Length: 312
Image (tube, rainbow, N blue to C red; front, side, top):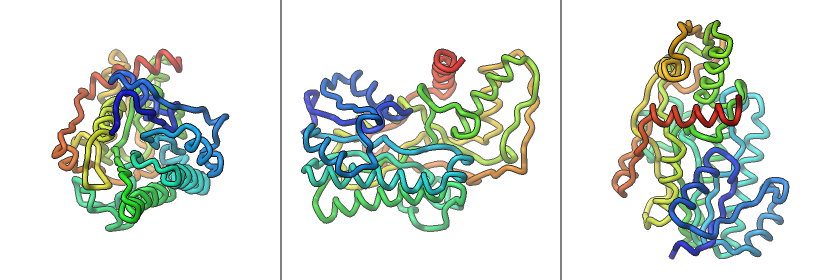
């Protein structure tokens, strides 16, 4: 039974999702949150991971540690993405089993689903088609993590859950123009245009792909909710069930960040669009009583304030 005095290990606590999980656990009154920096624990080293878990004996683990990025970095550093992610998740999941830790949540991504998937995407559509080429190594690693949790649950009766969030944004994100996901990259680009007071907003592709976004605090809320929930499924989608085009998101961001300047949007059609549409079916999460709560415009304002605080 997980309670407020249980030891909870958050792997990847400095990242976008991991830091939000730590905030949410503290907000909910959990007192024994275990974290460790990358310099002190290399999660790609199985022996070190096992020794850490054997010594600390957490009751629950959140696997938010991962090598992540947008289209550019996923496509350019394919070997690093598949190796690092497979190593991290394999080491934590298997070491958890060896240390008799029965409960964990593995965080994946909606990119595990086929590129031309029927929409909205149900959990059962996993492995029903070809993946998006640009992030295939990352997606394959995450699929392996899902199947690893599922297999350990079936063979060893563990309680390893996999939450598949849609595109996530919020405080502590990566805003690099090349290596970040599309939304924080847009925030950075529009802020830079605001400072210059002139220029065009260049967007990769033609702006028509549709994406669903979730505020990271809502994802963290889902993590804590399902940490304490008994469920029969291994895989659960986490999202809002609403999607908009890349161009629509750019228009929203321009109105919030740079409302007083007329900025022209230029589409760089030499760059890839990625998956044409990606919106999750969230009926299973709703069935268990969880829904996202944060209004997207309010979430964007919170995120932009964090960007100004840490990146200007």
